[in-house]
Image (cartoon, rainbow, N blue to C red; front, side, top):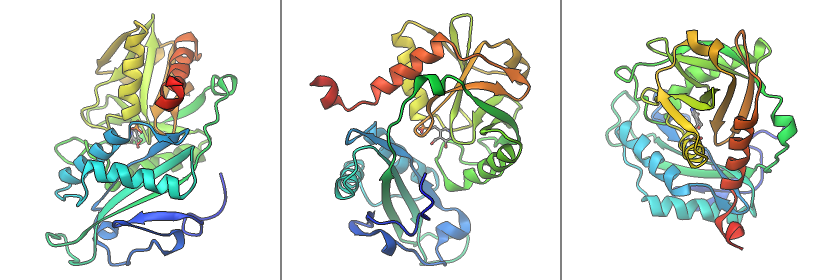
Length: 296
Ligand SMILES: Cc1ncc(COP(=O)(O)O)c(C=O)c1O
């Protein structure tokens, strides 16, 4: 990844309805979103010029805002169109997109009923690089100290910036300890998800993944569940306790950025990425290809 800081790049960012030069896409330090985490975002990818599941992401963005008690002043169709415009203007085919919505500066207190809602969409090159042999080595995952919060204490269904505070702390700790990521348990001590990806396990030909009712129900997670079912694999969405971790044979994580990434270790537990993980990894790779290319 390039070392150029993200505020120093070239290109265009869609900002409140207009494309502005990248370096001019600024906000004031007295923005509610910065002080009180009244901000929601998405992470999406375009493959071959087409944004994968764009509408699902736009719907989730609007839903996340609603959960945080604000309404994004653009429809799903308008957000979809704005995203297409950004990658087109930036001349990108394989890209990562970052829509972000936040409460502005009109009021600076906990209450911010009248604050203007802003929406920006940035995109940057993200080559779609796929080396199955390399990926099959698997990544090492640490156990996080923080847990996903009880839905009664945080808006856990939203992709809200505030929920990432504990993810960043957990990921930093994992990296310092030599791991690629960290597995977070939920507030009841059950297996939940990683800091930016969902988690799956395989045992005796069946796919197991935690029920996503107190953490993000990833769009990749849902896609992979569909792909597994299409393959005729048994899929069990259920409660998974950490005591079960040694009983699984394979493990992988899913997310827009991670796609399907095999895992070789979770804490003291060792996994050997095998055929089912490889199949789902390859099926996902095929699934994200642009429809027009597939149809051609
Ligand atoms: C905390 C968290 N969980 C799960 C995911 C996977 O979500 P998706 O597949 O929609 O990218 C992400 C990525 O956005 C995430 O940040």
